[in-house]
Amino acid sequence: MNRKAIEIQNMILPEKGYEKAMKTVVEPYLTARKTETYYERSKGQRSFYIRCLADHPRGVVVISHGYTETIEKHLENIYYFLRGGYHVFMPEHCGHGHSYRLCRNTEDLSLVHIDDYNRYVDDLLFVARIALREFPRLPMILYGHSMGGGIAAAAAARAPELFSRLILSSPMIRPSSAPTPWPVACLIAGMFCLIGKNERYVIGNHPYNGPEQFKNSASNSKARFEYYQDKRIAEPLFQMSAPSYGWLWQTARLNHYLQSRAWRQINCPVLVFQASRETYVSNKEQRLFVWKLNRRKKRMAKLIRVPGTRHEIFNSRAELLARYWYRIFDFSSRKFTVKL
Image 1 (spheres, rainbow, N blue to C red):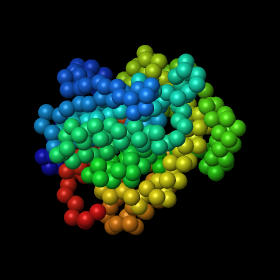
Image 2 (cartoon, one colour):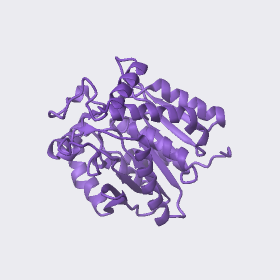
Image 3 (cartoon, rainbow, N blue to C red):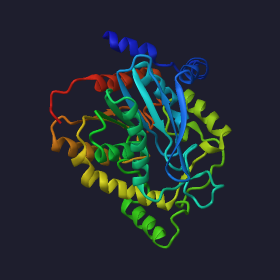
Image 4 (tube, helix red, strand yellow):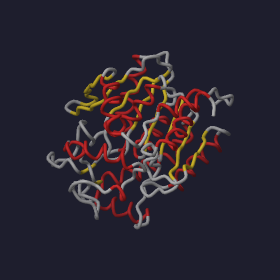
């Protein structure tokens, strides 16, 4: 094992004593380096993001979180990026956490709704350009998980000049609609949107009704799952739990854009992590997206399938995370000889 791998292994929080380590080490470390900010890209629509500054920066990372997630779910990820020498900028997407929501029923904090997936992309790029203005000489990396991975891929396509690397962890190139076939799910969503029912809960979903069970979750680490579960129970703004038909229809539009045009526009190297026990997004669509990127330019993208993992690969046990973060830091710092 080389020196870099040993350093990363020593940095990763173990399962035992995880909550204590988060509260006594990670949270104070982030608080000392964190600034919380609201911005309005459109009048009356306040979006929330944080900026965390590394002690010895060599780059900037913009993090795009997943469906029903918040900044608080990614505190450990932010900590590792800071320790690795990267400033971090992370917004909460529309309909999530502290950011603005589009539902007419303002009291319903459970529903995740969007009118146009481009809103996600525009908001993300707005924060990325704030980071660029502040640190114009540092390379910028875009990291996206799940829904945030699909948004990140679209952002990298829309503004290829901004990003030097794109890292996608279990990206939602297309969500899983099982057991309903995807074309049928899209048809149903489109019909509900057409008749003005776009804010209705997708059938089978419901408002937040209390704690989730670890065995049914997307997490691979019980300690990490319970740490965020406690935060979610205590804060109603974190209790997003179900998609609208409008959200589902917009994921179909996002999928079409990614597979028809976006792969032609991305110019930076791409690293994709795929969970082997995936149930939330389509692994087939991930493989197709990577194949298209490499068809455009050889060695442009690399897909890493992570054995034994559920959807949230970043919420795994320490031994797996050490390998995961070694791959991320190696990819982020490596010099690529292929001109992209």
